[in-house]
Length: 155
Image (cartoon, rainbow, N blue to C red; front, side, top):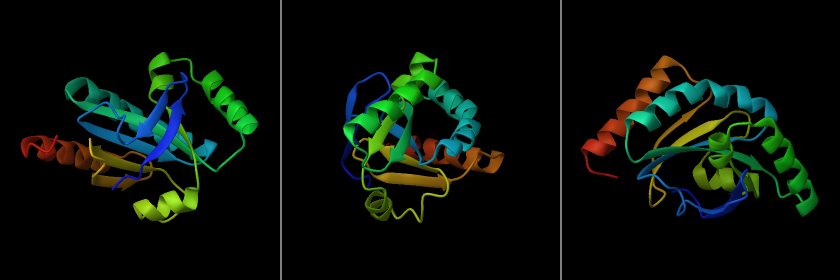
């Protein structure tokens, strides 16, 4: 189960997760380090295609960082906002400032060395999980899981 956490997207909108996720099925991409963005970017073509083809599916990028003070948070968010020109990408990027070790324990994520992708329903139940950069097998597995959940009426 995805824990109740809060953050703000790079457009300034506050979110209480998982409640404020807008899809019937939502994929969250959890990244911890700036250098993880490469791995995140490998997923974007597949996620954009799924979002366009599948009504009720949304995805979000969750930069997941430690509990920095307000000034550091403003600086970090400003740097990220400045590096993302696309308004849609800024809207789906929700920065989480929290106890990363506790967050990972709650989700049974082994460490912060890679990215994680979690497919959630509206209640925050994790139905599928993957780690690392995109490859065709992972993309097919996500698509299969999404189709099975929809066919079963989960969303």
